[in-house]
Amino acid sequence: MIDHESESSLTRGDLARATGCNIETIRYYEKTGLLPDPPRSAAGYRIYSAAHATRLRFILRARKLGFSMEDIRGLMGLDDGAAPTCAEVKERTERHLADVRAKISDLRRIESVLAATASRCSGAEVPNCPVLDAISGN
Image 1 (tube, rainbow, N blue to C red):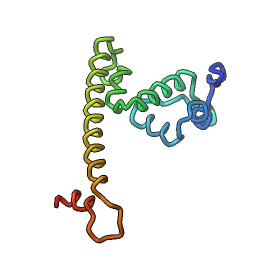
Image 2: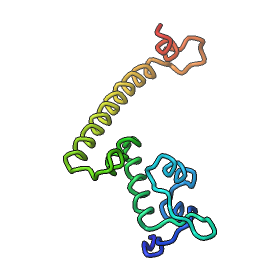
Image 3: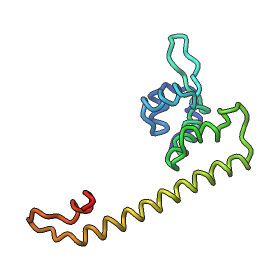
């Protein structure tokens, strides 16, 4: 478990280790504006705070749930500079849920077609293959 008190002065490598996020991904989130640029030390090193770690964890959890970068930007209020209302978050989440359900439906259809196609294949060492015929549209 990470001690959040120790997250008050982190290098990029420390932030990566504390959150389990790749350094290049942290750079990308900074470049896209999801993660604010941290202040720099007198020597020019980026110094991340506990707030950066908290925000990065939020981004990572949202990505694991399949939210797009645009949706995450909206969930954090970055698209208009205002914190979203619960109603706005719910609408965005329900829209995402509908997309997830559509993908699940598509995957179930694909599974059914693949299972039926595979069941017609003998697996024998013959030149004709029902799987290839199905993919070719024959």
